[in-house]
Length: 323
Image 1 (cartoon, rainbow, N blue to C red):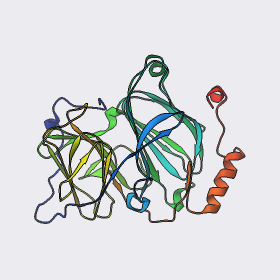
Image 2: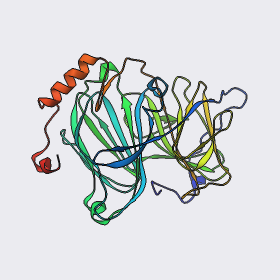
Image 3: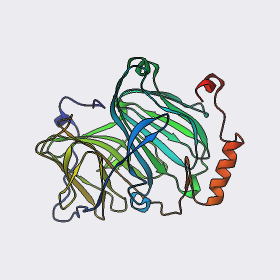
């Protein structure tokens, strides 16, 4: 899992340890094992929500898909052909492999290891995500995550936009004892800001914990909080709830989060790899149909009609063969 790494995390800014006398460490409300399903042109994903967890608990997030890890042979890699979105943002973070993005708004490019593609669908957009020609021809390891971030009603009609956040742009941090390495993609963590520009206030980070290492961080009390295990085993929350590969821990109220890696990690890696995510709940009605997330059924019907009549953009002529 290359993502972006550093030789010596001890040189990075440290996350402050929450004050043990005043901080309330969030307890685990529930642990949700991800379900395995197929997406796009037929690639496997591990999905903890929306099927496994109530969207009220994951608010403002709508969907989390872990793509891989998998090793593709030559010409085996698959992607997601052209499709529409409206009413939210898609965030694709790659740890291994390479993908190419195109959209009807002129955005896109190659997403390499450790990079993040942040697409605001807003009022509506068409896009695709496919393996790069190099990856398709040669094969190789692929591992990534796609997160859907909801938009409040007042911002569901914003113009589409695209951000490419390179691995070198991430904010790199270390735990107070240096045993954990954190890549902050978006939002604020203990006064440190990630590079992603968001409409909905969130915190989104990828952390690597060495065996036995602990990560503690102050967390906004008005934010939701979750820990998703990309790989490895460990413990989360005030009560040290056990978690392992593809588990999502949904946390309760508090102003601090804590997790610890198992002393011995089983599996293909020797570290605990997790996503830390949370945000300001929107608390609005959700009407969801496939790639559209709005507030009412009427808005969903309008989205379908707009897509069917070409009002969400057109596929560039050069890409019509992949539609």
